Amino acid sequence: MSGRRVVDSGYRIEIDRIACDAYGACAELLPEGIDLDEWGYPILAPGNVPAHLLDLAKRAVDGCPVLALRLVKVARAREADTPPPTVFAARRPETRLDRMEGMPPWPPRPANRPPKRGPDPTRRR
Amino acid sequence: MTARLLSGPSTTAGAETLADHLARLGDLPGRADRAHLIAMLDAAGLLGRGGAGFPVGRKWGSVAGRAKGEAVVLANGAEGEPLSHKDRVLMASRPHLVLDGLELAAEAVGARRAVLYVGSEHAEARAALERALAERAAGRTPGRLPRVPTTLVTPPVSYLAGEESAAVHFVNAGDPRPTTVPPRPYEKGVAGRPTLVQNVETLAHAALIARYGDAWYREAGRAETRGTALVTVSGGMRPGVLEVDLGTTVGELAEWSGVSASVGSPVLLGGYFGTIVAGANAWRLPLDPVAMRCDGAAFGAGVVAFLGDEACGVATTARIMDYMAGSSAAQCGPCVFGLRAIADASARVATGQPHQDDLARLRGWSQSLAGRGACRLPDGTTALLATSLRVYEADWTSHQHHRRCSVRQGARVVQ
Image (cartoon, rainbow over the protein chains, first blue to last red):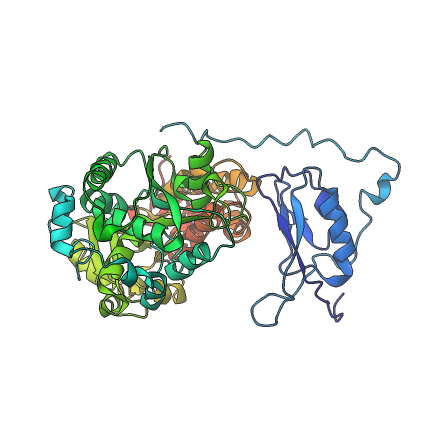
């Protein structure tokens, strides 16, 4: 995609980090804008969603099994203060969803990932 | 070192009574003179003292300018930061200054309810505030401020309980864990009402600005940001809380604290969510939120901790990382897994049993976790880690590659 001008859609993806449970559906549906870290949690490409990816972004937002994503309308990125829209992948690879026509909608949560847990914050030290 | 908040009797003399407080500082001005308090706070350029340094006038203005509904004011004295003591000292010695500020804030933003949010470990501060509330209930309030029903709430000991959404969450539901923002507390906070969450030191400054004006406030201070600030100094011969002009250099505090200038060892500034600055750069650094940000340092909660040369910087960092990982509210994946991974890797490096790629992975995590939690715990933790990796670069490298600690004269790290 080098040399191609990325047009700003005026929308940004926001993630509810508490709700997010690392299903990874967003990165499957929008690999250009969402990468996963080593624990399966999403990393967003900086900046607003590029205009040509807006429909795919909407699909990723609707496709989150725990509805942790949303699209927020923001002012279009101005050159100085907001990073321009960026994309991770040059070409959109075939996603799991494309291969899943006619299958039940969501794969189960990967079994090998431990549940989020930590110290009970209400416990006195 | 201008004394304003801490002028008058020594902070060790116990809580000032209402009569002493009014005799020393004078009464608050009348209602008509208080009408422009928000504009005065703007003109004074007062920044929040809880750590984020948000402009106070703008914060009060956004709650006061709400479309509808009653507001709530929450005085934040949770002070969970392990290196900070200034809030508890202020609450324990000058409770009426804090309450003046709280009631002024309630009046300015039109709040009908106030919450005093005091960490349960600060028993002295809590007792002082309870006594002060009783004194005010018995007599008339300073400046005939309208009475605001005030609830004293004590969150459990936890680093995150003082985070503003966590404070609101605890008051509402007894759960001191941050919530997803937006909505931010100033939009939807205590009991679903717009809530002004303000650090107790900030409120105390507002109480003085209401009395003496913004021009008076700006007389103190040597740098871009005017006024005075409470700082907690540790690591020297003489640790403690003191009030300094903003713009006072770290070197001057070193002198006050009995750290010799020739030592020039690294300094931790801001708090556990702050920055480590190499001694050579730190000594001339002014304690001023704006100037420090330009230099990549953080004023944070006013913590100045001299780390000294005797302690291994890698081990110190590993301890802080472990504390922060243990402080995670365990809600957001990048924080739960990321901070724990950082703590474990830094502990391995510090104790001389690093995995082959630990240092490289620490460098990566220090850049990849910011902005990926509901609150800013991962941001603050990785910011401190990033500065430690820079300042103690030689030590990290020698720990990782040679299992040698430079502090112990190149001795092999004993496991």
